[in-house]
Length: 98
Length: 305
Picture 1 (cartoon, rainbow over the protein chains, first blue to last red):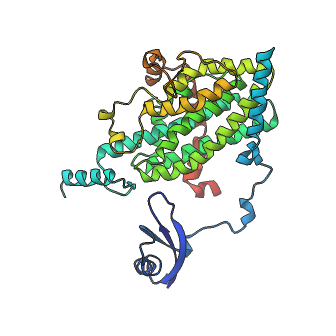
Picture 2: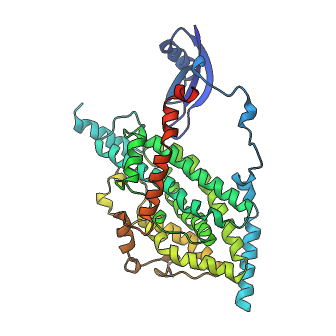
Picture 3: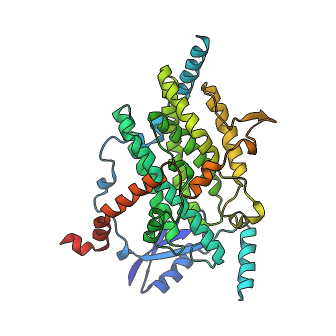
């Protein structure tokens, strides 16, 4: 018997989402069990099962953190756009007046 | 089921607003058309990294250099996502790359032009990414589902690029007369290519991708949305627009078809733009010098040895 992780997709626009797992002797039976456990009420249109032993992950999650200040990768770095827009418009008025 | 029956059922699925997955049956014309369209988008992302890369030494501060680097990295990342979606339609990445560097396939017109100074970064980040976002946001509703899923990520990153570009634009616009003149000079050079970016009027009855809802809107409709959104912003900043000059009518900013000179775009379609040969040469050189990386990745055991 093996643990199979179950992924389900609601519609074509959605990504597959992890929704739980089942224990089964093979992939076919895992799909059947997953359908009965997680898709009894049309909660999705697509179902995947993946043997847990086939899933790879970082054993050290700190590797996923940013190694340095990379605030420029985030929209919050450009939050002051309204103020900057006003300053630019002010500058235009100043130039037009002179 | 005969081919005609399959085609009829496919067409009715599309008409009902259903989406197509890579593993679904699809007519050859659909597969070829979507592949060509996504391949062109992927090519444009990877070629689009080059003009901004050329501007990196002109960055006025370390902070601006870092943020421009991050943006270039995003564009290359978009090409990786898009080439992967295209590959699932039946053409290998290597074949797509070969066709790009030998000039058999195309990339967007704006990346065939030279860059001169930091004002170009403002225009590319604000107006060209703004134009790209108008077209890409329309594609979020495309009938080819794998494309829409990567576009979600691409559009959210393009939103950030737009902020980045507007930030640079506003900084230059609030600055000295020399800074403002740089922006105006860049705007004068880029305006026609930006108008070309959306393409000539769509011939609706001949456009299969529009028929199959891979594309959702006509070129002129997207160009109109861009003009209505950006012309007021540009003029509010005190800049003037060169030919083709938009004019206000019935609540819209319009450009007359006859005011658009299409000859530069026709040259680019023949891969004969101002910077086409040099940029494709740069890509080819990278392809050649990075061969060892591809080989090492293909044979991890050799790499470990």
